[in-house]
Amino acid sequence: MPCRAGITTKPDERRREWERDEPTMRNWQLFGPFSSRQDAQEWEDEQPCIRHGGGNEPDARGIQWWGYRFDYID
Image (cartoon, rainbow, N blue to C red; front, side, top):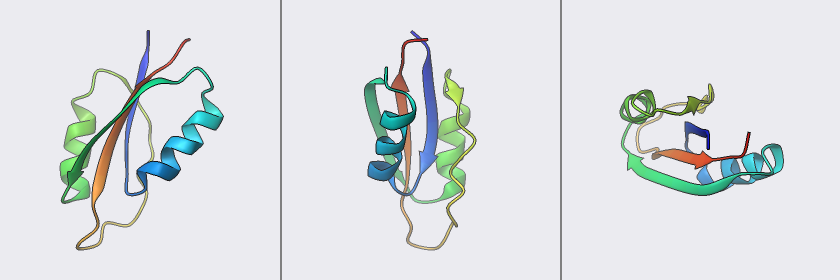
């Protein structure tokens, strides 16, 4: 089963978006929080999944970044 991974500062909102866009989504997992976008990006870069080019939220001091990963049926 293929998987996707990405980063965000709004994990609940991102999950709802993926549930809408990828109806076969399974096994949603959340990782973090990370203290910076760079730390979250390093986590994402290590994932063996299709990575989603997102995480465009501004990186401001005190913002928590999260990694997410899920499986889906191709």
